[in-house]
Amino acid sequence: DIQMTQSPSSLSASVGDRVTITCRASQGISSNVAWFQQKPGKAPKSLIYAASSLQSGVPSKFSGSGSGTDFTLTISSLQPEDFATYYCQQYNNYPFTFGPGTKVDIK
Amino acid sequence: EVQLLESGGGLVQPGGSLRLSCAVSGFSVSSRAVSWVRQAPGKGLEWVSVITGSGGITFYADSVKGRYTISRDNSKNTVYLQMDSLRAEDTAVYYCAQLTTSWGQGTLVTVSS
Image (cartoon, rainbow over all chains, first blue to last red):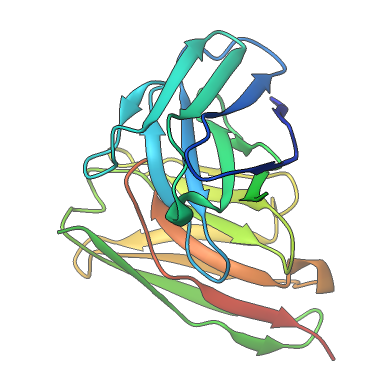
């Protein structure tokens, strides 16, 4: 199975900060990575698919990059509504696997 | 607008069974893959199973293989997750999702005596 790791596991940031989250796959997965945002008590929300394609309706402050084994999610200017947990997921091979998540909270 | 609506969660004893349903609108389950993903209390997301669009091929996480069965009814545009031999560690909120686009609101399954 492909293992997905994320770093950092948590971070504290201020409104307006640029935030970058890294996701690494245990083997090459082309660009078959998605990113999700989850707020407490809510279902995950799709942000990015195919490593860098923005889901419809998602603001352009979110961006994704990478291919192969290393991927990043960047939030260009953190806003109060962005404080949440972020997960990467590979869908290149079954079983699909998620990263452990990165919790972004207020500094 | 795509919508997925889960139902069927509840309290079940260890060793028991439960069937979850995912009613889909906005796309045909016979044309797009639908996955089940679960989240244990206070934990991260765990992919559980998928049924592909064309062909209806099924895949499972190792943790549920042999105990869970995913299926669909094209006429009802609904995907099911039959869960047998349930264990305490299966306790979680179960989401159905067209993974890279839309998720349901989740249904809670509690396995406890």
